[in-house]
Image (cartoon, rainbow, N blue to C red; front, side, top):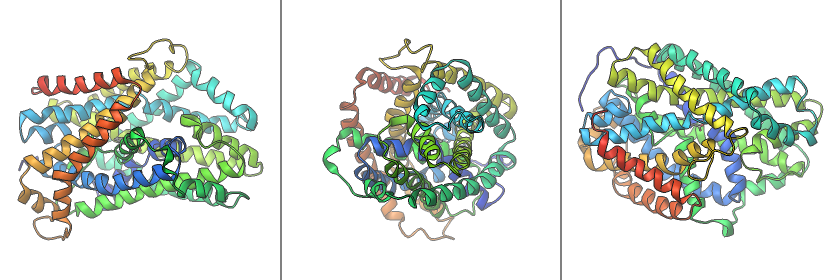
Length: 471
Ligand code: PHE
C-alpha cells in the first residue's frame, strides 16, 4: 500500500483536520437524529448501549479508517483497491452510501434553513400551530425543494474550493460557533422549572423496552453519527500528513461528537419535560417540539429558536460536505475528473435523489419501493444495512488482510508517537468487532419490519462484490 502521490492535497493544520473531521461527525445525526432515537427507544437504556458501541466499536473503526486512508494516500475505493481488486466493492459501497445519505440529508438540511426564515416571518410563534405548520411544510411541493437546493448549493460552494481552502476553513469557523450556541440553549433549558424530569429520562435506564432493533438502531446511529463505515474517514485520513497522531485524533473527534449529541439532548429533554411535551415525537422532534418549546417560553424564545436552527444548519453543512467529498474524491482519484466538474456532476445526481425524497413526503407519497417512500428508503438502507456492513468489511479488511506491523508503524508514525493500546485495538478490530457487528446486524435485520428492503440491500452488496472489480 506504499503509494505516494506527490501532488495530493493536504489539510493545512492539525486543528484544521480535527475540526473538519469533527465537522463531518457532528451533524444532523447528533442534533436531529440522536434525540429522537433516544426518545423512541426509551431514553437512558438506548444511551447506554449507544455509548458502549461508540467506545468499543466506533473509536476503533475510526482509528482504522484514518490509518487506511493515510497509509494508502487514497480515498475509499482507491484505498481498498490498492490491496486487491477483490476489495474494490467495499469502497464502492461507501461511495454508494454517500449518494444515498445525500439522497435525504439535504432535504432535512433544507428544512433547517427554512426554519431560520420562518422564525423571522413569525410562522413559528404560535405553539399550537407548529405541528401542523411542519407537516404542511414538509408535505408541500415547492418550498422544501427550493430550500433543499439552496442547501445543496452551499455544499457545492464549499467542496468546489477543495480541502484546505474550503472544507477545512468552514469547519474551523463554524464548529466552535455551533458548540457555543448549544451550550447557551442547554443552560436555558436546564434552568426551566421541572427540567429535572428530562434529566432522569436521559440518564435513568429502563431496559424493559430494549429489543434486537434497539441494538441495531444504536449501532447504526454510532456509525452514522461518527461518519463511519462508508469511507468518509478514510478519505479525510488520506489528506493527512505523516506527523499526525491518528489514535489521539480519533479519540478527540469521537469525544466531540458524543459531547455534542449529549449537549443536544440536554438542550432539548429538560425543556420538553418542563413544558409537558412528549419525548417520542420521532423525526419531527427537533422541528416541532423545539420551536414549540421556544414559542411557549416567550421573551427570548424566538431568538433562541433562530440560534438553534442556525446551529443545526451549520452542523448539517459541515457533514454533508464530507459526504459529497467521498463521492467527489472517487471521481477525482479513480476517474481523473477535475474537481469542479466532479462536484457539479455529483451534486446534480444527489439533487435528483433529494428531489425524490422530498416529494415522497407529499405529492409522491403513493410511490413506494419495498413498502417505503424514497426518503425512508435511503435512510433505512444506509443506516440499517450499508454502514454496519461497511464497518464489518473494514474491520475484516484491516484485521485480516493488512499487515499488523505495517499498521503498528502507521499508528505510531514509525515509532515516534506512542499508541499503548495498539494490541488491544488490533484484537478488537480483528475478532471482537466483526463478531459483534454480525450479531447485532443479524438480530436487528431479523426483527425489522421492512424485510424485503433488507433483503434488497444485502443482495445489492452481493451484486457489487461480484461485479465492481473494475470500477
Ligand atoms: N455524521 C454525520 C451526522 O451525524 C452524517 C454522516 C454520515 C457524515 C456518514 C458523513 C458520513 O450527521
